[in-house]
Image 1 (cartoon, each protein chain N blue to C red):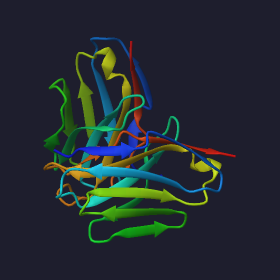
Image 2 (cartoon, chains in turn red, orange; image 1 turned 45 degrees about the vertical axis):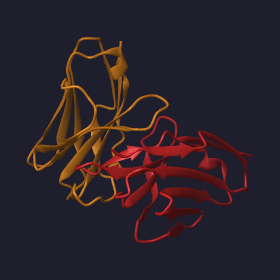
Image 3 (cartoon, chains in turn green, blue; image 1 turned 180 degrees about the vertical axis):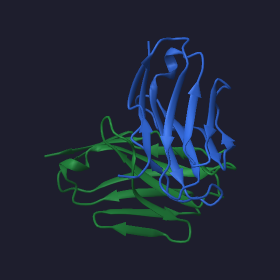
Length: 112
Length: 114
């Protein structure tokens, strides 16, 4: 099955700085890589995703890059704001049900 | 809002009891997946239902069971509750199972087992 590793587990940045979270996966057949943001007590919300036919995708201050050869993908947040503080999860699909295997999460804190 | 709704939002049960959680999928979505999220961890896949049949299962014991109805809504049943079953239970609906599409989560049901 799929194994997804996520680093770092905690990340503190100053407001306005950039934040990068990295994930590696094991199943070379994986072709879809979503990122979720989860605020305290709330559901994980899909914030950006990338499919294996592209190397980078941007949406305003958020971008995701994918390196299929190395089997890793990263979330980049630029010009961080306090409301970006949350737990971020990466995921990759596996199995016959194409269920998502999640990373262990990164607690991002943006300091004002 | 994702269009995926879950009920109830919170639930407290006693060890050994049984619980049923409900999920209504987003309009047009025929696949429902259930996940368990323990405190401080990422969601873990329990099982998926497609066309009223189980379409895949994670590493959960048989006391976790489910149903999907003709309108694509779904239930998660847990028998003989244990303290470790305390978690946020999330359901996600998607368009088709075999081709991965975006999975949007409902707001979740917070289950506490005492």
